[in-house]
Each structure stands twice: as C-alpha cells, then as structure tokens.
Length: 574
Image: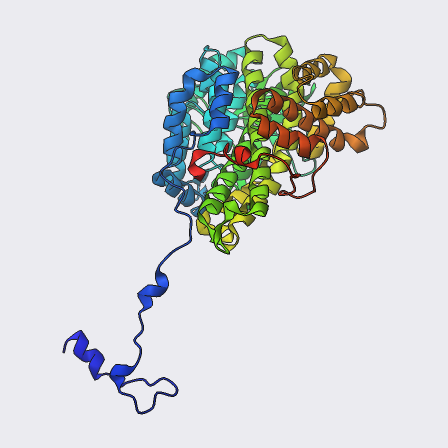
C-alpha cells in the first residue's frame, strides 16, 4: 500500500457542520506553513567583533594602532559559529570536582569541557594572559586590553584565570628570585593545562586567594596562618572562601605571619613534582560565570614562599588587585557593548505595527541611550588601559591618574552593566529571555564584575582614601577633565560643582557613592567631548551632566541627533 492509498483509506474526519460533504471536500492540514519563520533577526554569527568604530578609534588614540590587524583576526574568531558553540558548551557542561581517584587517593582536580580548554588556548595564544609584561613595545597593555574586550565578548567565565595570570606579574616582582623562575612561564603564549611541576611546563596560569568566611572584603580578619621553616619556605594552615580557577598552577595567598598579614606564593605542584596540599572542599554554585570553577581550598601544612616583606601582604597583593580591577572595567564595557549589539541587531530587523522597531521613536530613544552608555564605558576603559601602559613605562602622572581612575571606573562601569544588559534584553522581548538568544547568559554575568575585586562600597571608599592621602591623584584627574575646558558649558558647570566636593571631610563616607558616580560621569564627559562625534557628546552632556534625563534608559531629551549616536554601534548590529 502506498502512502497516498493509506491516506485515502483512512476514515474521513468531518468538521462541524460538514455532514453530508465528501471527504475530498474537507480542508487538508499543511503543518509546514506554520513553521515559516519571518520577522526575526538573523543569527549574530560569522562577523568581526572588532569591526567597531568606538573600539578601533580608542586603540589608535591610546597608542596601539600597530595591533589593529591582529585585533580584527581575534574579532573574526570571536564572532564565529565555532566559538559561539564553545561558549555554550563551556557553560552548559560545567566544571566537575574530583576530590579522590578510584583508589581513594586525594587528587583535588577539576575537569573542564574541551570547549573551555579551546577558549583558554586562544586567549593565552593571543597574549591576553601575562604576555604584555614580556613585550616592551609602547601600547602593549592597550593592545591586550582591546583583545581582552573582544575575546571576552564571546564568553566571560574563562576570562577570570586569564585576567589573574595577567595581573599576578607586577605583584610577583616583589620577590625577584621567584619572579626570575616563574615570570617567563607566566608571560608565555602557550596554554599548558594539567597539574605538573611548574618548571617543567611550557606556560603557567595564576590565581589569588584572599577572602575567608569570617572576613570577606575585610582581609585583615583572615585566620589563615603561616609558619616559617628552617629551609626558608613557609607552611600555611587555613581555609579560603572564594578562590577561582583552582586548576591554575600558582596562587598568591594572604596569611597571618609573625610580622602581620603577608603575601605568599602557593604552587599546586611542588618543584619535585609532588602535590602541594590544596584540598578543594567544594565548587561554588554561582549565579553566572558557570564555565569558571570557583572553589573553597583548605591549606594544611601547605608549602608557600613569602612574596614581599612580612606585614605588607595587602600592599604587595594590591598590585595584582589593581590590574584585575582594570579587567573588571574592560569586561563590563565589553558586556555592555555585546548586549547593545544584540539589541540593535534585533530592532533593525524586527517589525512591529508596520514599521521596523529601529524606526519607532521610543525604541530609537532606548537604543540611542544604551549606545551613549556603551561608548562612554568603552572610552573610559581604554583610557584607563592607556594609563596602565604608560605607567609601566615610568609616567608618574599617568600612574597617579591610574590609581584614581581605576577605582572610579571599577565602581561606575561595573554598576552600569546590569542595568544596561537588562534593558538590552528587554529590547528583544521574549526572544531575549530565551537561553538560545545568549542574552540570559549575558544577564547572569552582568553583576559579577561589580562584586569581584571589591564591591561598590569598597571602591567608593578607595576613592576617598586616594583623594585624602594622594593629592597627585586628584591633580592628574583634574588635568584630564580640564583638557576639555570650554568645549561644552554643561561639562564646565558639572566640573565646577564637582571640584568643590573633591576635598572630602570627616562626613564624606555616607555620600561616597554619589561623589564617585559624579566623578565617573564628569570624566566620561571630558573624554567624549574631546574624542567622540559631537552628537554623542551632546547626548551624554544633556542627559548625564545637565540632568535632563529620567532614571531609566530611553529617557534622552528631545532635540538630539539620535541617528548619529546609533550609527556608532558595531557593524554586526546591522
């Protein structure tokens, strides 16, 4: 019997009111018609993430124009279908803790999906880890910052160990003998995973262990203790509360020594190839950042080496913290820009009530407002990276600016990421709430950088400390603002008002957040007025400095050139 004869032999099903009509007269179902897809944006794959005027102009302006061709190569890879699959698999197939082997031996290893290793391999190979410290070219740290932004747009979880490997080098230099051994491997472009003796590997990754259950941000409350040994090593005993990437090779750890809180280098594997005691009690079940393993390690007679003087652990490790805070700013700026790109691509292709969403006035206001936020965040992130690069080359003014601007940027840009990503997700509506869009992963990731390496209050208080104790920081910040003097009266007035508040008194703490927010906005305004198209600077000054704006995105005042603002969104959004 053929398929057609089977259908014709089936009993006819009559629709209501069709009694007496022949089966041939009955309507036939055609399910394929209901699956025709129209009015949807095409997938955002197969594009160059680095094809972004704001990013490219910033790279050139800050002194790394020589990197643009490589940046485009990283951008094309970041926008590929293959890397999108890596990102999805690395987050869906989360790290798995193996505390013991089949025989009952303690091994404390974490297994990752192959896609995680693929992401890490590209990041290290492209010099996004410690490589800039081994490259004397001007602009090296700016190039690395731009590459970090582009590559982390694909997946942010694996960026954590990459960031810590970059950040550990200046802190480790407080112990020249240790740096001589480990720095060449930390600056390697070879990703060499697995627990083996460090000196036998082709490249190393680093991590950091500061926080504990009873202290959190208050690291001076740490109870991990260190005892010196006759051979010059130390032994640690304690339990850390949040230590990311436990399969990294080396960790900087804070512990109480006889001379006070001190910094120590803890390798997972000792020089003789034996395992150091690093008992992973559990992996954290986090809101986002699922591809990255964050752990609670226990130290029990764990071998360590002192880094820097006893009693100066915070001062020693703060060099590492400063660089990871810079990466928090870079990561948040990247997250905002990625979400914006998805939103604008959707509204350029989606029609509602007979017109494209992008052509509807209220939606144009929303995406233009997000565009202004994103450009300001990207420009500030790259300016701080430029300061970091020049500070490494002995520029004292840039070092002072970096000290203050990193804390200001860490506070504000990381604060803006959750709100901006949420608004971008809303532009996609229900489509954005679906995991297949990638937006939920961006949304879960959004609060992270505001928490890691010091939450909002920590950074706001850090700004107050810098203002009170390091007058050269305020001088460098003021010089950056005044470089735009006279270019926009709204910026001039905002700076006049802010300047009167920048000598904090005894009662400054309750208003620290408000002060730092204003410092960030005035700094972003100065950068935009000098370097962005006038339409973008005008929209920023009108809405962020003059105060003519609501509390939500999409409340820009009338009379602005929104078309030019939106045109600054990455090409992939078209």
